[in-house]
Length: 62
Image (cartoon, rainbow, N blue to C red; front, side):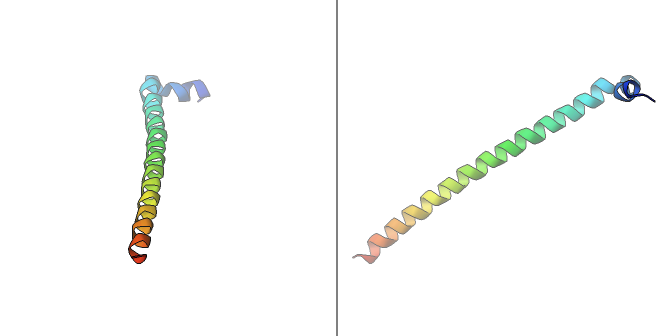
């Protein structure tokens, strides 16, 4: 079996490699989305912690 036959997969290569390509693409997209959501959540948490610290400090100064 040579590389051409392997890639052709008995006439089903387009579907097989297309499926692999689609799955790989979606894994990259999902990883990117998760990273963006994580960064957004981290920034929101930092904002909330800063606001809590500000409110807490104002309460202690009274």
